[in-house]
Image 1 (cartoon, rainbow, N blue to C red):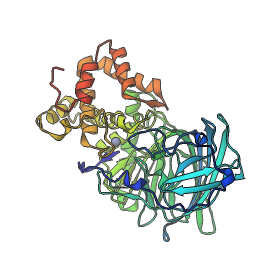
Image 2: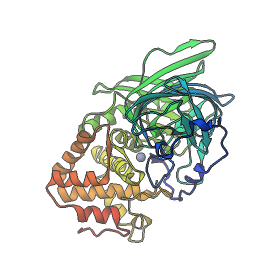
Image 3: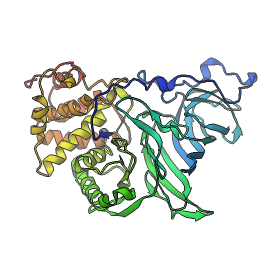
Image 4: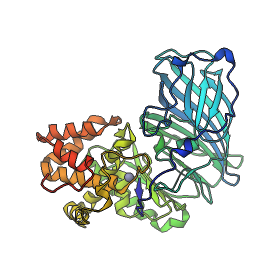
Length: 472
Ligand SMILES: [Zn+2]
């Protein structure tokens, strides 16, 4: 995620959105009441976000069929989720915010369910054994409600716009439009079938699998993201868009869409996106996905999100720097994903450092100068009291995660030298492509690639609540 105006307001409402509301699902018959040990956990195990994601299964694929009417702000949804049980399951949870449930089945047998807050508990007709592959299907309808809070996150999730919807979900807004294992620790492949009024365009991750089909005044777009993706990166942004499609100089498919209000940006965003994607492929290693692109919508979120293959820019004309940031996330955050939110600097520190590298590449200033300017802010600057190696759930997107995270990488680069540093960036990507990563893994690889002992450097930059000395 990148912000066009980085504010440092603290995030206090994330946990409040998880507060319970009365159950409105059908009650489980008493005969189906599970033995407690067989119930999947309501959270995936991230203590900072205890109810995000769920335990007991691993999703392989989401098939989402959506029909959205922007005038009524009404969404009809059908989700088919293929998963594998990682324990015996008499019941399991999904995350879903709002909506009326039409029906739930597991392997085509009707299932019962209950709801509490954002937790949808599914009780299959018969318990699933550990290792079982199963498909849960859920139909639902209603008016999606984006998450709004007075924090440094702003509004996220499914956000209605004047002509459609802007869909950007970090950290946990996927649940505002589909039932999900809504935490980055569970990656899956996605197929989307999105129906909108004729004249509108629906833009999801990956590539179109066929020509859009129009009938009865509606057009259906089918998109496939064939690589693993975390739920907050899924999108279905829709509305009136002008498109430019083609290939980058390096031969990668490139699709940029802009709201008509940003028509004059289309060619520049398209060209810049292609050039930066190709450049990062030489710096970070082969591009991990099968297309690149971007979407500029007219809803003023004040931020951009690195949605897989299609970063979303919310209501502003994106400059080179933020495009460089969001495209760097395709490697750092999207291909290599964090398992716990506390490691967020592995996404944002790297994407911010990429902005510095892009500036260096284009002759607009060396990373060392950006580092020096920030360091010179003084020892009482707020980024020094917030160690970026441990993102806080109440202030997840603090500037320190971005800027001090990037400074950490620069300090590392100075300590180990350019050849080792850039070898490390490529090696990091190659070793963990499409997987999950942790800070400890990065430190271990940095030491291995450089042959240097680096624990003091990382401790000072990532974990101490004070400005590191430049000799450390
Ligand atoms: Zn970012």
